[in-house]
Amino acid sequence: QTVVTQEPSFSVSPGGTVTLTCGLSSGSVSSSYYPSWYQQTPGQAPRTLIYNTNTRSSGVPDRFSGSILGNKAALIITGAQADDESDYYCVLYMGGGIYVFGTGTKVTLL
Amino acid sequence: QVTLKESGPALVKPTQTLTLTCTFSGLSLSTSGVRVSWIRQPPGKALEWLARIDWDDDKFYSTSLKTRLTISKDTSKNQVVLRMTNMDPVDTATYYCARIRAVGSATWFDPWGLGTLVTVSS
Image (cartoon, rainbow over all chains, first blue to last red; front, side, top):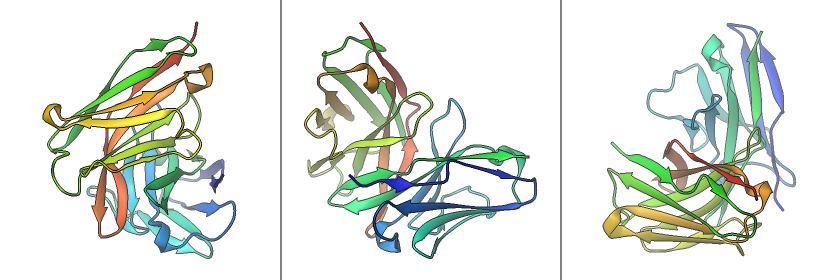
């Protein structure tokens, strides 16, 4: 069973930078997994931030960026703001029509 | 503008079969390239991908749940239906449907419906 791992939580100061990662229990994440990232606030449906590794979805501020860092996908928030306090999920496409969500990261503003 | 809305029972009993409907507008599952997925989220827990159906009726299921899931479409009603058999309290979750968008081989979920909470309890 494939597990996609994310840091359980991160704290960041307003204006600070935080890098969230998305890894595989076995193997490396590459752009061939077409990683996407979603932001979810309590009681709300997820909102798409990044797709295809590093493409920002329409209307997403440019303080959000995506990349591959080492063997993981990464979501970088540069200049964090109060309303960035949310849960963040990555999704990897495993091929054959199968997707796996990451375990999620809770980001808290200090 | 594409919108999706989930509907179904708020409460089901253990061992029963859950049937959820995703009704959408702004797209048609008879159009090439259109895909819709179901995703769920137990209270306080992570999102979990469940199933996908494509315009050409290809269907894909979560490896761990495939024996319990059936996804289908009614193109004339702009609906996708998910059936999950043998419900258990651990299946208590908010169930979302989402359109799958694509650029080349890259796919992602957007937009999402608001979700519907299903509680499994006797």
